[in-house]
Image (cartoon, rainbow, N blue to C red; front, top):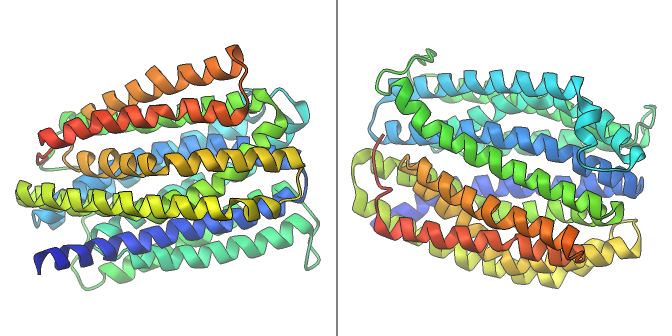
Length: 443
């Protein structure tokens, strides 16, 4: 009965999160198809501009991850006031970070985009697109923090519903603004950027209303960002490694994007075509990572380490089986996916090869996401995770990317395969930490 109860709890969080991620990825595919009809330059421009946006998202993700660790453990301990204070503090930090990123992207878009491509046409298009989408950074910060709050309340279906509505808004405005429908002027890729900003603002307002409704009747929310049970030094000792993890991982992804872009515009376009599918498959199982962080954190907050370890192994098994099944499905469907794009045959062929590599490595990627990104972090042992991430990414992945692309001059599928061996290194090291059980601590 206890196992069934846990699985129901996990599914209550995991399924809405997975559906939300998959929904976002599927709408991203629609966006890609719309932009893809404009040609490879537009596809590449949106892809490299999106890389800087991804850098911002993972920094915000670090703050959200910290908030999740705090809210889940304090919630498990039954401390409502400190849960509220954790939410307020991390929301404030997220907004400050969002303001800084927005200003940098508005002021320095062109020099930033030149880091990703040597093609002047691609750089100009990417810079203009980046300036537009950066206006959605602040709403995104609010969206992520409210979503984390609702998931810790085990109301993960509410962010899903808001996400569905926002995705519909995004797709409608994409169609209208990219192609100039309903009397609007055709704006091309910039229209996709404007649609993104509109949908982010809509999502934020909707979630604010949802949070107010969810909290109504449960007592006054403490909006003070001042913590009572955690010192500033303790907060920083947990948060800074998370920030380093997310920032350095995203920086490595930007390094990889730069490598792809300098291999060639067509190769960069091929990699860009794979991003929505990667997001779709990883998103399908990302709910397990979210569920792990919340539910295992609550068990640690209660002081039940035995239950935390047992339930962690169950989540890892579910992730392994699910990733294998989805990898097989991808191999069967990738040919159909690449044919829906109006791009060069070389781009389609390279994209299929890249998707094959991704399908092969997806079990390792998913286990890393659940184990390092959810389970071990839930105990606040972020410094160990940071060291493993840095060793794998910057000790293995980045050197192999440069060697394979610039020294050995391998084709892009081989470059992607070699740099992805970092995932295997990280998984092996994190597994050692997991079985030793030293990560199971309360904050």
